[in-house]
Length: 563
Image (cartoon, rainbow, N blue to C red; front, side, top):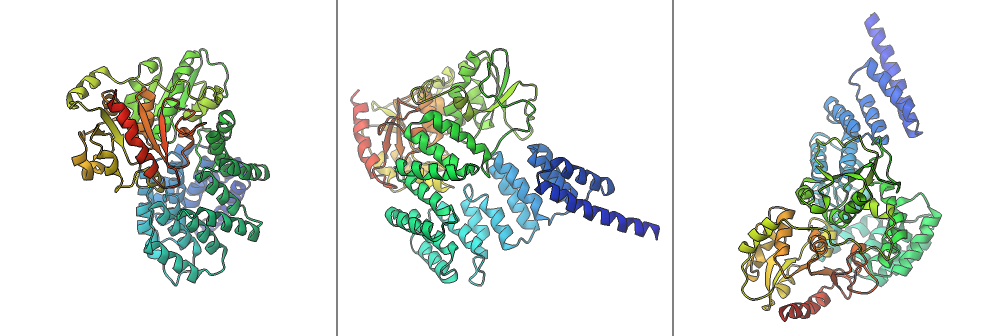
């Protein structure tokens, strides 16, 4: 009897502490929330709500390793509790661990029957990276009896990411018009559809009308700014976003997009400062849980600084140019980078006095440092501006032994040898936008005046074009790619890490760009980027139309052949 009464009292206290703890978390009182969770766990060692609350507190404190541990324990206790899975995915995506996040997503859906809103929460986070997989998961929820507009809106984004057009897309929009007549959700979907179908002027007019219809929302102001940016109307985008940033200074997405516009327009110092807002975005990332302070430009002589890579391989290559600058300032540099580029950076003569660490799941970031800094923030801290953005761009040196080996593997036939990459990551819409459509690639490769060597990864992309390529080598890693590039006369690439790699080696590089380039390739005049002044950029002459760059390319190759 006494045991029964004690259990009831304990349960009553646990329920009280759960309410108290989550209330404190909501109010930002992290110490109180942690205390409530600890008292619960003292009563019941594996109480699932307390484990989840402890994970939330650790995550808010940027103790991501500890947060993951608590979430994993909560999942072990209650495998059908979906919230720890969602938070685990959030942490993994923050660290750009896409595959691991997809694995957690699939594990959650194998154990939990989510509500439709939970299904969208799980899938939406991975739409950019895995649209085909998210289409498979969201598709069954598209039921005419289901009027959950979030599912339909999320599925529309999947179709965009997969570059789906034509009758399939028209049928989808017809279903939305039937199910959601006269709603905000339909208005937003119609505006997005016009923009996606390249009906720019109609999209602008509709977004302007919807801005008047929904004055309390910022959605359509932001959409207008994105349309202006995608169509190279930087002045209009700048003005639109400046108004939004002034009105909503805490909204990081507005400031982040404005940073892109500033960088495209050549306001490099201002753009880099605004770009720091990337850490405050919903899917931003930072390492403030580290015990050392973030470097803000203090003198570095004799100091130890931890530089942590971020974003794509191209960004790591582009901003790696500043590692020698930190060394020149007298810093003891540790650079943390992913396995794919570790060997390349570790072998660089310019970094022989730095310690390069491989960023794996088991790596514990060093705590015995004076400062840490994200690699893309170094440029901001050292005062890079419009006049100096191109400095230090050429700094990578290939391994001479590998170069000699690749010269043997790449025999010449008298024609210039040109490396080519025609596609980015085709699992995302960004990859499709940056890639040459498959039916146009032969127009480039069919030029008889040069011999083309594929730098495309993975090798399966080469299969349809093997007969047009002089060589389709098996590339092992970035060191192989560097050695190959050193054997060539030029490199042609769309916006991929290969373009950054070639440019950072000082190889002649021709970049084929979409109409409104990524800010890394924009410049004061067409063809001359601020960050890579030696690179030749051939831009589309209108959005999504590759005919212009393809038409201008043969003359550049002809000049190469006549040397």
